[in-house]
Image 1 (cartoon, rainbow, N blue to C red):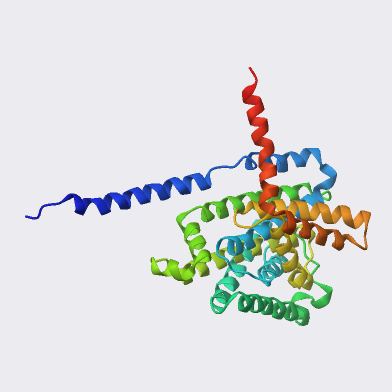
Image 2 (cartoon, rainbow, N blue to C red; image 1 turned 45 degrees about the vertical axis):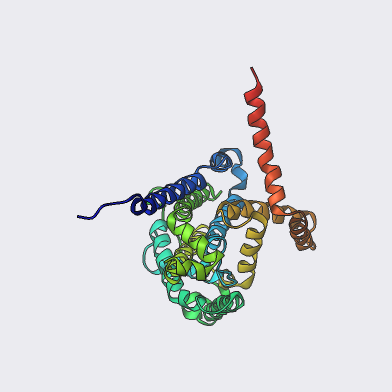
Length: 346
């Protein structure tokens, strides 16, 4: 009969301590932040406070979902993509074709669009596993350009350069009609954005998300400690493609129109710009970036219609010079001071 010594038990205890520390770290990273208690109630309150702004709010929700999907692969997995619009466009066309030829219920079309985009994401994920970031940039851009040209040439299916129209959407879940002012459309998009963001948040701050962070930091070291890098990247890329497909489907369903513009390069550039403005690696950067980018673009296009891109570029220069981290600390300082002031009152 063997005797268990202290040396035999110590590695187990150390392993348990490391596991406990890892669990505490994940709980701390996944706790609800101050701004989360503000952004979602504010989005709901906008339904009643800003009834004339439903269309631009819907645009923000769709763009935010698109940005969150890219942040999942860029901010967590470190996959730089210039062709994320491929999944956005495929989702948009799938939703339009499904409503035109099969079934006009929006939620069903949304799910079908997500599945089709996910299949495309899975099929193309193996291409982005090879080479450097530059190779990935060119590969993803090439896929999007090929799909855009295919949509332009296949007029019998997609409507070509004139776009796909002539279809109508039924009530959401058979209950809520799309109204002329866009109120129900905004509520629908906001609900999809909330659910999808919560799912992405759960994924990002789980052991799977931590593994993606490790792969982004050093894929070789992650492989040495037993993290299956290729499999994790394929799963993350596929999930992000599904989310981008949802965003494209929402655009089609709220406008009842889709054209090759959904596969244009500028959409990929815009969503990257949004993440530059909002920040990467915590999902809400896509939401804040979409809000800031859309409102700033809308205001500048009215004030200076010919030069609004100049001011967007100036904003990027300021972000680079000042640093987003310093700006974030300034923003976080405000609620901290408010909380301290409220606690100091008798």
